[in-house]
Length: 241
Image (cartoon, rainbow, N blue to C red):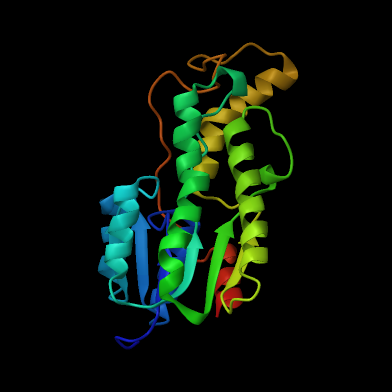
């Protein structure tokens, strides 16, 4: 690794696929800018790998996006991985507030578009931009309304950018990794699956599950580490190398 090596920028790098990819690249000596909302998980991986620099920022806000741009500094960007995403709100789509849906779309849809616009001028000639997609982009799933909508829209954004940047040397890609055991999957199992099972079977709601949202009455957010041996991270490395 040299000071002139292009940065590999990864959002949602504190946990899951993003964390696994950041660690794999850093192990190879490739410079990584790891981005996440919470500083503690980023500091944990940055301590283990000198090739990782961190940026604690909310990708859904202009101030967060400006902080990311500032963290890139004068470095060129080799790859930009849009991995950050949220599942919430879950439950019947018509029960969700407009505020909750707007907050969701700001993270899952608006942020990748805005960050691409900010960082594309810094990308090397053969730079690559990748969005992490989902099967939810291609079929409606009860209780996943906001997530299905945002992933479908992000898939179309990828298709549009692929056409608009066709003459550019920068490559655009969208990867649907399938089911990976990440904190989001933990959240699905903890919050959404009991609601879906009750809807399908007609069995009464388990104690502590809200019938309107499928979420436990107490605040719950899945945390956890990444998957250093994550097959998806290995595939991404192969594609992006």
